[in-house]
Image 1 (spheres, rainbow over the protein chains, first blue to last red):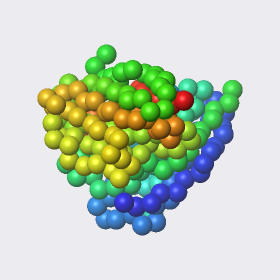
Image 2 (image 1 turned 60 degrees about the vertical axis):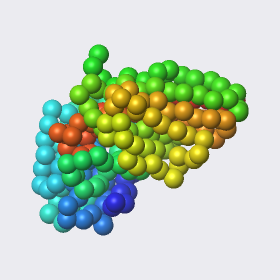
Image 3 (image 1 turned 135 degrees about the horizontal axis):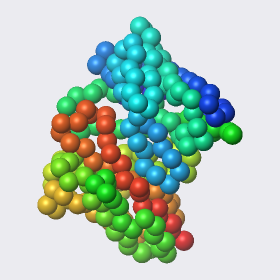
Length: 112
Length: 115
């Protein structure tokens, strides 16, 4: 599984756009990039997944450059409730069970 | 609520005691996973079931740990002779064979404190 590197923590303010970048220099051809969000005292929650270019859903956008060695999770107009830990995961997305490998994640704090 | 449920939510036990946790996955999900999370760290994989078959176990799962999923529905995780190092959040997740491989649905976890 490709190793990922992301900032330990980030701070921002309500209404701002937040971008969290993850490095995955050893990503393999079949690997997808997945982001999870975890609030205190809760289990992680799937946010978004992508392979290349840009993916957008109702929660976030994921930008992946052509070389796929990094990715950026973009949260538009954050609110206090977006304060959480965000995990970047990289791995092969086959139709089957996956042993998720989490790093330390990025602790995002949104201030009023 | 049709999400993954875990019981109990909190458990305090004395060192040396046995504890058992229960996980009820989303009803149509045939895959069930257990993870452990300590403070400040991401979750670590422990074991995985497809239906009632336990298909993978992490080296983290010592002989004191055992997990079952007898009828392919709910699962239990038992820790025997608990140690202080077992204090952690134990998370259960489930997924369907129709889901993309990396999309798992997590429960709220059981927080274990061993005194």
